Image 1 (cartoon, rainbow, N blue to C red):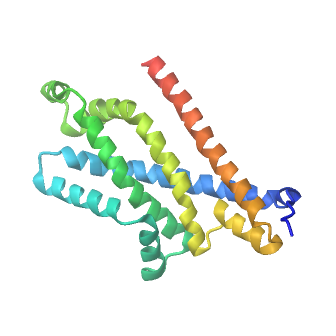
Image 2: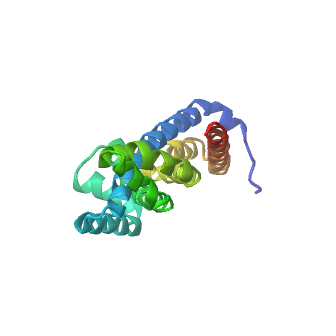
Length: 215
């Protein structure tokens, strides 16, 4: 017997799908904000003239990049007993911060060294040089890869379904378990993910163009 498609189920569960979209975006934005902060700190440590800080930051990047985000999630959720949201947020943050740290490091190293030397020679402290001269230019350079990192977070947020987090992928399982319309649900969620990631990329690219126009 041929499978009978019933796309009306998606309209019936539109509230659940919308809830999943909102939750996924909230989680992704929070994880991205924390990842940028942590990644910037680690990225700066990678270029400091203090060897112990460079070694610690290098170790962090290598460990976090080579341990799957799902393993990190299970570690925080089962070993530390964190709630599903906190465990997922922390896993996504630590995982993506390692990639952002390398992006920040590369951005800093792409700047002419004379800028930092001139800023220090003019009387600015190291902190002032970093926050007023180096990092603003760095973030203008690394904006495109940061967009890619945010999209990765949006996609990786689906790991939350393994601990019962009611993000978008969870809603697919909910629809399937209640209606046995797994194909329709999976198709809808696939399209939604594509629209979210493409929409994010377009919005961020527009923001990048405006930023570069005003520089």
